[in-house]
Length: 186
Image (cartoon, rainbow, N blue to C red; front, side, top):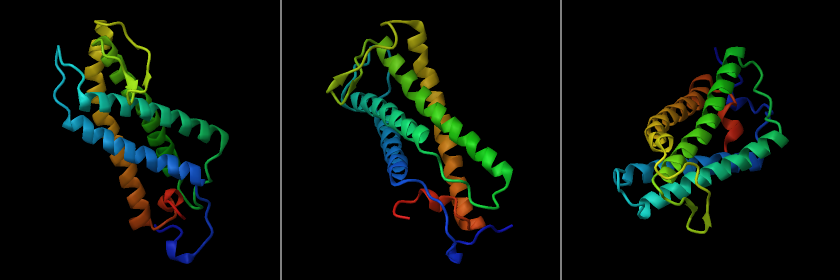
């Protein structure tokens, strides 16, 4: 079934410019965060936070900050209505994947921060703003948070992939306006 064809020129409601900027800033930040995470040395007992590890911790803190701004914006500015003709199950699936993404964008960095705190590392926002410890040094919960952080980071990556594939499906198969609503400049 085809929905509103993009070539029809029909009016549609897109996200605000601020929402689009926050979305794509998060995309870029997450891409950088995964690149840093995969480039870091393996963290073991006694590992000291060097440049890449500190950069990874700062980027995680920045993700939390950006997410807080994004959620505040979303709470004060409603999302545009879904395109006409979108089946209810797609709206529910969209809500579910967005909820999972938001949840993981909070939980994954917090678990990494807890693990860093348990290792006795000070998490800072790019060496400018020191952040409070989320776990006592040596705390078992904080130590195991690192393992859960890694597993959930892959689940977050899978959720992002589902989100991207759904957007591409809407754009290239259904040819509706779902993806277009979040593109810059449209």
